[in-house]
Picture 1 (cartoon, rainbow, N blue to C red):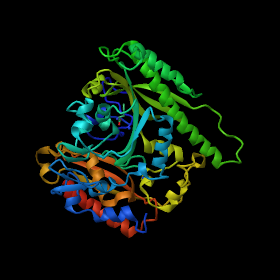
Picture 2 (cartoon, rainbow, N blue to C red):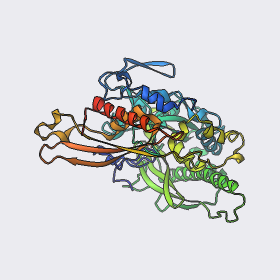
Picture 3 (tube, protein in one colour):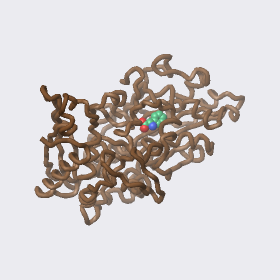
Picture 4 (cartoon, rainbow, N blue to C red):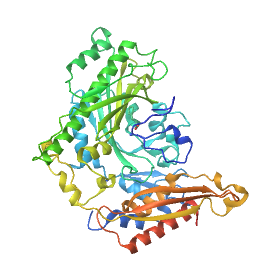
Length: 501
Ligand code: PHE
């Protein structure tokens, strides 16, 4: 599934429709008040200071969760996204993201696992990338994909950014960390610039297990784990010299196999817990129906690649007729433990995106809903966190009409036309997505590239995007949709230098 040395990342967003070549190594993976808030708020934030990277001016400093940061020319965080840094949906009682986190935590009990849920989203590029062995040219570092405060500081793109720190702390035999993570991305019903992940790790210490025998200790722990009756497909060997190598100088084959077995069982138990609850919720919502599903869940292990684990895997779940990637994991790269000063430690790590799981668990059809403050959404989950038996599928409260509007433009403005250089303009679709989100916020359901061509004579590139304006909370009037679209076009001209056709 993953190119020979491509970067697999279950939780890194889909890149299929992206124009950027470097992104080919990334692949699919790891939502009011009395005001129509996001629509209104975003409409208000089209001033230059609030603009993304493409703006001509940026604020000199920004404040995030009470701390001030100095920006530089790398700054590319829109005010819309900045405002989301304080929401912390994973900590809000009875929010579906928080409920999903709790269910996951229940499978990794204390005191073996220690829970961390309050880490700040602002981290260094070192923490987010270098400490994990990301190469300097990894596409995840690009400004088109990551929100930077300045050259050395960013909004974490994944919870793995805290691995080095937690391994240094050596506070427990394992941990679970939940947090908000940020990625510039497309606009559609399953992508949002902020989402949540849970990261988990388990560590064993050679100097603390009987006879120094890690493999035996890990297997003894594995024997203590519960079993399940899911159908598991795991066609590959625990490691493979070319595709999924053992960390030969650090781990013996027996140790790596034992750690892999413990990791896989632990994660299968987690998935089993989540999907059994999803099934039970559906069954409870249709008590009169005779034909309740009795098929066991099916999952499969797929080989993968992450810079900070080896061997690595993704876990896929067969759900409603499709295989869905739900998490990425692997045997922790020994360098992480060595750099943390723990020469005798080894173990596994995993990361899972919460929204995708919560969307399945609660049958939530649009990722924007998680950010809604509408009581018609929030009230449906009250009391669930303390009593998971109350979990039921979400009942959509409305379906408002879609309103499609196209925007066609030449790239690079007038100057790019000369000498046939129009096609060479540094263009990334995510910049357009950012302008749309910043201007129209959650009033946009999705944005798609519908046409693209190069003028045969001038060499200029033309693009046409289709924007679907549809609020989850109310019917948008024609007037306000037109007005938003006008402002989107103006934003594209001012911030990205395109020429509307
Ligand atoms: N951090 C990875 C991602 O966001 C997931 C991961 C975590 C993979 C831990 C392996 C181990 O895609």
